[in-house]
Image (cartoon, rainbow, N blue to C red; front, top):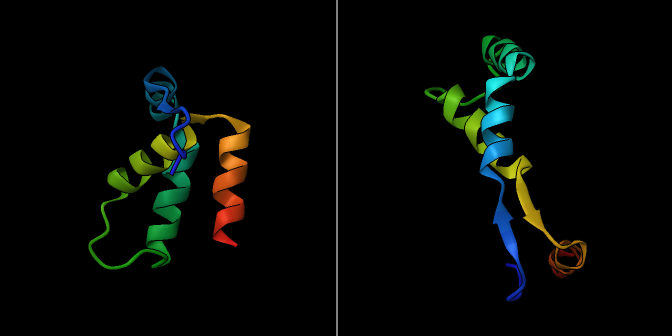
Length: 71
């Protein structure tokens, strides 16, 4: 995906985001109540994945190349 360039993950930011995620959890519970997720979806796993994606680190040029190759 990164074409041989740096793609990383910032664990400190991930843990911080997960620790301060009250609003994200509230929105998740609201969405679950209104059946926005498939049956049996694990909300904590979904939010952990979201936090991981948010803390991905890479060069702007790498992201640009990845995006333009998809379209």
